[in-house]
Length: 83
View 1 (cartoon, one colour):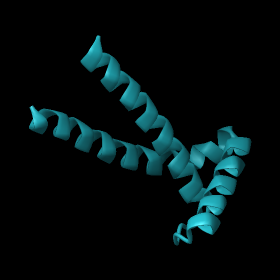
View 2 (cartoon, rainbow, N blue to C red):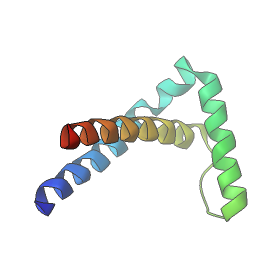
View 3 (cartoon, helix red, strand yellow):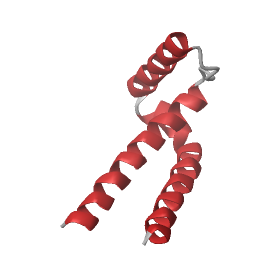
View 4 (cartoon, one colour):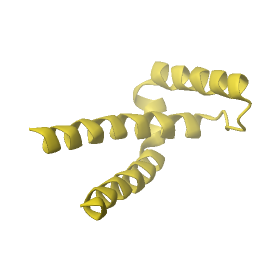
């Protein structure tokens, strides 16, 4: 069973990375306020933790898409396992 759930999570991680990178430019075209908010959050995380995160529009858009897809994937996975 761990191989099955591990494979599902591995695929989800890879898919969110690829889709996040591909769709990041659309965040700035479709929802500029969301892009600006993501830049602010990344800058805040960087200043609080000292992590060397890039504060760029491309990275911020990628993070927004990845978080959204990961959240939806988690909800679908939970509903599939516990319903």
